[in-house]
Length: 294
Image (cartoon, rainbow, N blue to C red; front, top):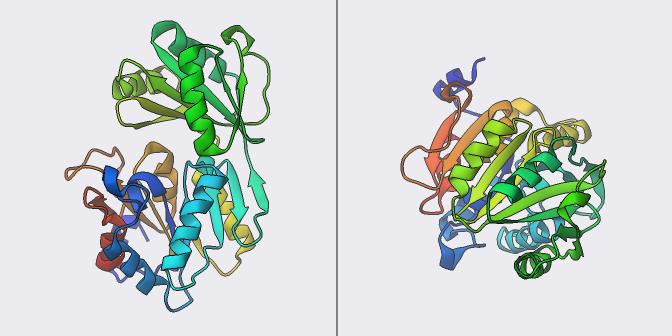
């Protein structure tokens, strides 16, 4: 059955794979990091029968994803989230045991060119996060300021590296971020994706950009989960997200939910491969997706 045809039938979904920032979490600054009460209630109903499951699929590292996971479990009547997909699919964690059961890192052949291009043409700070919880940045005062802030957030140890040392094959890079001091993140995003087609670039406000290797994807982690959970079928999975790094998950799952921050459509996708589009301007995107479709 084509994805578009499923809109005409009652959809049976057993597993919800949801992005966090911009999708499940409220976008309002004074509520950031929280889930709206209506969305929590709707999720609770979805999970109540014991036959449905929620998996968090996020760009956050394990530590930060675990904080939200624990917060949700306390408010979902004891439901236990079985897996965490972290670092945009770079790491898959058994949430009960804490065991990392799948890990994938950047291919760096073009990454060094991208970082050097940004630094030579823009006022920007780069931060490279590795699988062993190290954060690499340049040894200057502004890079140090941002690195201190993000190292606390990610629980990472700060290391300094010179631009000319960015070469060779680093085997454990899982996340790369830029702070644009021009506040031109959308313009820079379009430029980087056109020039370096090996990467997705997501933006968070005017300052922050995140670079993601297209060979690392949340959907590949979903495939690893389905190898373990033999009774889960991809046709019965729903993928929900709001960024380019969510797109494969949304399009390949049996039901795809595209989420926007805005009231009008701005997330670019092929509508024939998406089942439902909604806004998260009010923090109720996931609630709407569940109530109107399942």
